[in-house]
Image (cartoon, rainbow, N blue to C red; front, side, top):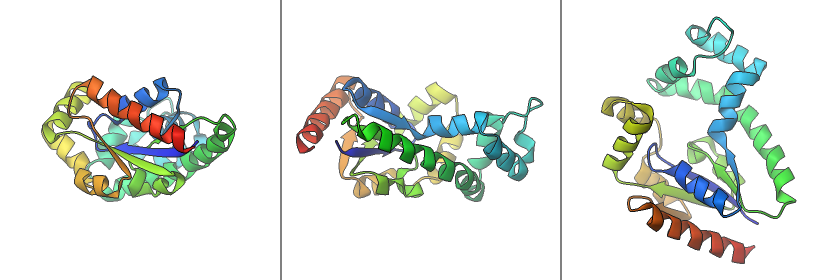
Length: 197
């Protein structure tokens, strides 16, 4: 079965689409979950992050992730510093998991917010971008994370623009309609990819 690289911009509904693929039986490797785990369990990563961003360490030697997010989403250089620590470690884990899961002959979905920015699209046979209207993105992110419009705009500036991501993708899922409409697109893509394998 092929490996899918799934991405989008903040608030487009990438996680919703990933969950739909999982319901169809796909194995989802969530880059955010892997990097979160690195920031809570990998002492080497925690030490490196604390050295570069000293103000983000809590009294119990854990990373204050919300403080870290506030720093890195203000400055592209800081975000790059953080991803240069986390992504190589996460990539090792992903490659190991891919070789394990390949034996199961299931569709593997790499759920990666910075798929193209990180070069992880090279791990995938097919890339999918989830798109939505800008006002939908803003409303979803405000409801989920409580960010202001300015904070959302700032985060979007640090990613490749959605229009550009769509031009780089093999497949686009339009998540600006109902959940059922999105699910129909996922079902059709899943069926097509199954036939191809």
